[in-house]
Length: 399
Image (cartoon, rainbow, N blue to C red; front, side, top):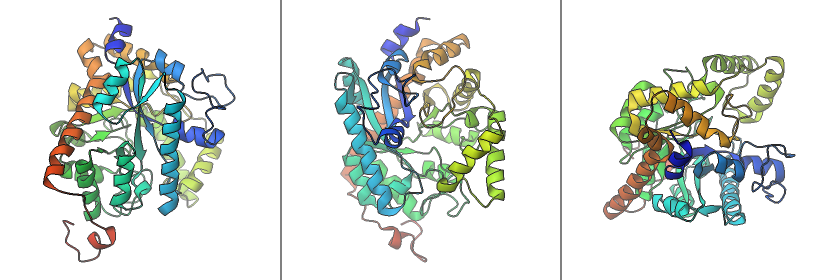
């Protein structure tokens, strides 16, 4: 199989990359100092991502995560998210010959026609809207095209996979968030949320949902992964699970090691949802307890399982590059997508299968989201729901 030709016809659309937060921490968003137009492998701030390696990897579109940590709350979270959005614009504008801003599936394909990579945005964690549908609408107006309903901690309206359950899924306001995302044309991203939140959101959404960077729980037991019954529901409503490469989500020994970190932190009164304290504890634990390694074959197993359960039309890729320090061997940076596609080809995946995985499935979901939004906007206007009303004790459970 000619992988170069395959990727020229079906460039990878990756669902999640944390380069922008790396740029914030390392250089205060100074892309003169962090010049991603050059290969940064041996740079003073080595990253998993830069434009030359994206080209080598056959990447045609990237959802940049406009992530902010859950230690930022309220208006601070909103402001930091806006700074991340601003950074995405600055990154795109700095390399106009290589990147083109995209907010629709048509924009993605137009970027390819001009020889550029499409630059998209996804917001990771519902805390970034501060329980405000008006803020959600303004993020959409700025070009953000998915919202991950939670990060590692619960929001007031949705439970996270890595926090103590409170809502047992979505609250009435959480369901209103999903409906308003549908009306806007913003994809509902269920990575990071609890299994109950996954099921609630899939029951509410009127258009296909996504997992921007999650793998299969039946293969690796992690609360961040997707149970089989949810994969089946995702199939039935047309969504896509974009398989991630995070070692703790794709390799059982790595998952066991991560559980050890969580348990040791809990013994010190620190929860995984407490990012301000868990991060330093994690770094210290790793020095004393070497982390096991995953490799490319682990990711192959997850791709195959998602295809087996959900079907070939419901699998994609969301590497989470620059969101973790260590990647599986063989998938060390964004140049390595051809290695994964080659391994899948050896496992019997056809060119059509690989094209769906690389980009065709998520393009279909983007189009369905856009079409659904146009139809919904004919039926209802912006939601004026407020969390203090909808989730008040005794309020109508349907919001």
